[in-house]
Image (cartoon, rainbow, N blue to C red; front, top):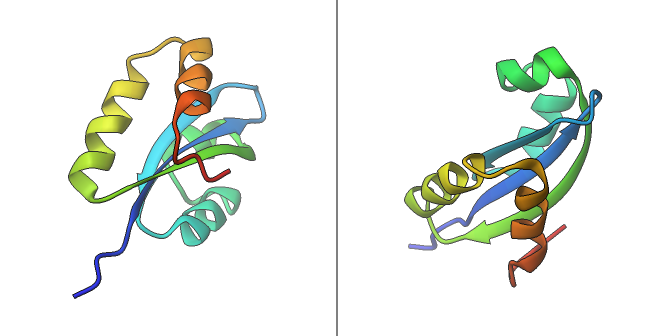
Length: 89
């Protein structure tokens, strides 16, 4: 059985705020955000662009990382993603 990876991503909204989320289908999730049907936060603020993506092994790891990132200040969030070795985007 092949395990599909999970992704932790950070995107920028039209008001320049940042949103961090997780998914196991990045392309589908970004399309959902772009169409205004994703999270309430992104729906309200408007999707501007995806900034960075990190690949993780499973949903549990993704959720833990998402929580950790959401506790950080804006600049620390960006730094966290930039320092991560398995950055995709």
